[in-house]
Image (cartoon, rainbow, N blue to C red; front, side, top):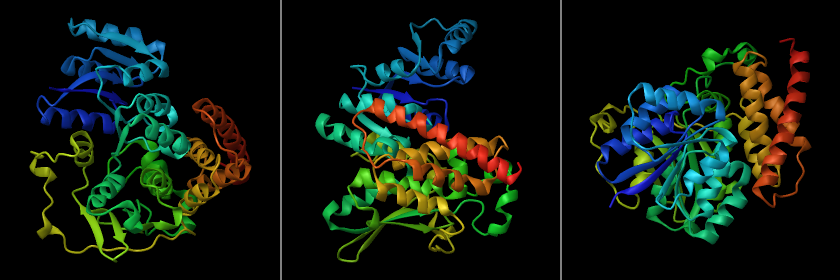
Amino acid sequence: MAQGLCILGSTGSIGQNTLRVVRGLGDRFRVIALCAGKSVGLLAEQTMEFKPTLVVVGSNEWVDPLRSELDQRGYREPVRIEAGAEHSAEAATLPEVNTVVSASHGITGLLATYAAVKAGKRVGLANKETLVVAGELVMGEASRSGAEILPIDSEHCAVHQCLRSGRQREIRRLILTGSGGPFLKTPATKFDSITPEEALNHPVWRMGGRITVDSATLMNKGLEIIEAHWLFGLEPEQIEVMIHPESVIHSMIEFVDRCVMAQLAVADMRIPIQYALTFPERVPAGEDSLILDLTTIRRLTFRRPDTRRFPCLRLGRAAIEDGGCAPCALNAADEVAVSAFLERRLPFSSIPRVIETVMRRAPRSYFNSISDVFEFDREARRWAAESMAASVVHQGV
């Protein structure tokens, strides 16, 4: 019997790749719900192909355009079109939905993902912000509901696979790998003049705007340390980061007996997506482009990251060590700063400065509810805007 699937963020990179994987899996999955923002044309195409019963857009202004788009294309299948985060949460908790892929960007996917976890669904988690800002709440709810959270981030999916060779208590250290982004060899003295176009030119992956810039600042690795802490129950000091420009090994685990398990694969998000959808079974991946040709790998290199040049990595580790509201402050400030950089309102080098300023203001208190998370997130964004304005004046942007 086909498994019911809900995709949060279906028009983004992960969402589109999830649907590519679903196509290749035949009748294993039936798409019940699609949730997206405002990409009406693409969402209409997805609706026509996969025939969900519920489609959710980001706001009411996109409901009529989507309905009109479907009408113009002659779509006559029954479909309910709704808008907003509450309806995304409804989509993620429909009785006929077994698996939810959380691929929405930023904190926008938190409410629906939390609802899915609370309802005991299997969650394929690509939205790292969910655990960064509300890890204790989400994992606590998963423990109560029995929800299974399977990481779709290539690094955490690699860790999940390596853990099939041992138990959590046997881990000595976890090694997250990263390409190092486009500025691995760029002198820090040139960081002030880095343009958005340069930052978005990732050497390996093709991703959305914020995550690509996060890769350029190494903030993505800082966020991944926090996510790994919650996913695998490890202390921050057990989690290391290694720069691995070839992006062949996606993460490693060193066990207490000093054996190291590594997961190797081509850099394609369809691999971790399929793993999460079909776990614990491994299903053939049909496309030749997903084959890792070992004869073409001339070398695998590793180096420790330079946190002086890339302070965002240091800030990510500091956030989980500080605890409380610090990770939420980190994420909120990063979103605001990256957005300003992409709009040419903030220099690349000022991104970590804004984040650190906001983190200093974060209290050590913990959240009692998801509403607390959203309330503090709004406050932290306000602090970030204030800090950013001061930085812009200082830098003369």
